[in-house]
Amino acid sequence: MALNTALSGINAAQSDLNVISNNISNANTTGFKGSRAEFAEIYAVTGINLNSTATGSGTRLVDVAQQFAQGDIQTTNSSLDLAISGNGMFTLGDGKGVSYTRAGNFQTDASNFVVTPSGAKLQVYPPNGIGGFDTSTLSPLQLVTAQSQATPTSLVTMTSNLPAGASVPVNAFSPTDATSYNAATPVTVYDSLGGTHQGTVYYVKTATNAWNASLYVDGASAGTQSMSFNTTGKLTSPAGGNLVFNPVPLGNGSNPLSLTVNVNNTTQFGTSYSAGAITQNGFAAGTFSSIDIDSKGVVTAHYSNNQSSQVGQIALANFANLQGLNQLGNNNWTASGNSGSAVMGSAGGGQFGSVQSGALESSNTSDTTAQLVDMIKAQRNYQANAQVLGTDNTLASSLFAAVSR
Image (cartoon, rainbow, N blue to C red):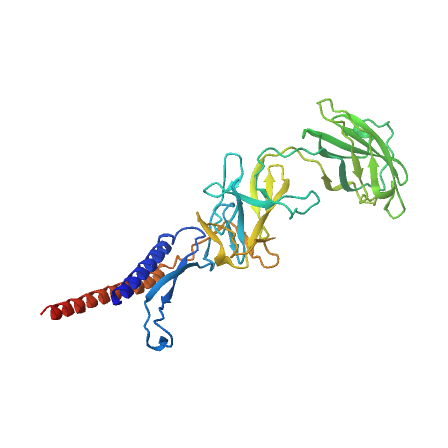
């Protein structure tokens, strides 16, 4: 009896040592979650109403319970290194099913999908086309590294002051005759292919409080529009300040350039001509330059033309019983009947923590001192049970020797 009891203790201590050694070996594994060996007594009832005199029959391993306490967050230099501060797990797809992880050491593969070191693809909610994300579906995150499409200029906004005391030019207007206009404002505009063109608005005073604005693009006329001011120098026409000009063919394979120039903030005061802020809504094509992931898991691609686009929002999952998850290895888990179905969401909402880019969650067994203390306890348990075996063997030997006399 004592031999079997001590043997069960040795096996339990060995199991405990195996679990602890696995924890220590993964002290530097990103996102690793340690385990704890849990035991139960073996108790054999010998008969009715004899429980008070029966002794236990040893111990047995009943569970290796995963411990999902959060590890320390360490900063890194990679924007694709991600850590979750709080609840939640990253969602992964590998073509065989969905799995989950806390290890955020992601990278890109040959097709620019964001993947784990083992090749599982990080899942996101795709953009819904109206400024948000479609949380009803998941798609793998792929970084679009091709050039972003050019956008032709359609609106130019100009702020300036036209001198109220200016004289009406004597000569008929010509962009090549500086005496035929009172002021000119240049602006760079873009066509549908992303090519740049020089636009210029020429201002010609025609009468008291009345002006003409003529637009030329690369020397080609886009027409002339009139402007008028009241006696306090405020623009009165056109309504809304929009000067709509004719399309200008550019002859380079792009669409004709149709421009509206908004001069709503243009004034006519007694001071000299001065040009203020000038903005336009076009831009050239741009190449992919960087990726940014905010605390809500929104992934934004940035391009060399100062444009950006949102490519997805990282999908997080949580479970009613994390310890019920099935462990796959590679720091991945799958849902089970014990864990319950995944509760999906996004960072910063409801029960989910925030995402930190340029950081990784360390193993929660990185405190090796605590693990070594547990190892010493398991080793002593092993030695104590081995001593019981030795003692029982000595007693049995003595008994056999006494009986044989």
